[in-house]
Image (cartoon, rainbow, N blue to C red):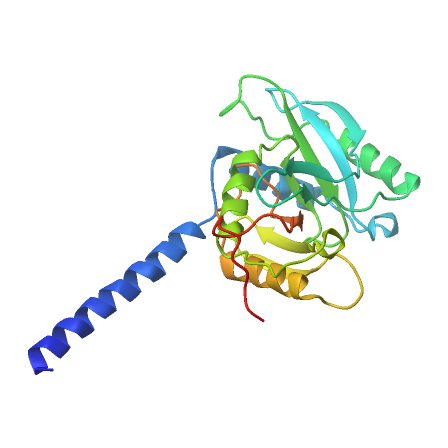
Length: 250
């Protein structure tokens, strides 16, 4: 190969690599919309007013209704059940919520928020009251603010499409259908990928773990989402990555 041709090939390879890196950075860019900025402002206010208390050693999740002027209308205890968001591509997908706190902690959290009386006004982006989900904890990393009713359907559909492209399971019986848990932050980066059940790892489990690891980073979470969410993804053995029933060789 001539020197000129080698130089041309090297230049093309360089620009292709730059495009790949750029696409990865864009796909992992966090959403900094008005809802997310509002949540950060509320978080900042909470931490300024905060004093460490033994009762908040574990996070306490509360739902908070805020009127257009920033007034606190209602405070209630958040539910602690898993929320199904999509099941027709790979299998059931759920957002895993944290465990419920003790009643004494919930009461203390409710009193703390009620005593604030007022939060930053959401009127810059909303003409009606908004619902926030606030997790209070002594740890700043465990304290969080997000919108309670974030629509994750489009994000879940895109995530399952990405995973399905690299999901090639071995032939398995229904009880071998794997369940994978993983966390996703606002930018779409995944972490803490693990099986959702104990016991010996099967070929199907290995294929599911590889599919989640190879399909990330995912799209950024919608505006107003938590800083991170935990996902439980179930895999149906009847679903294949290429739609033709090919299986990965092990």
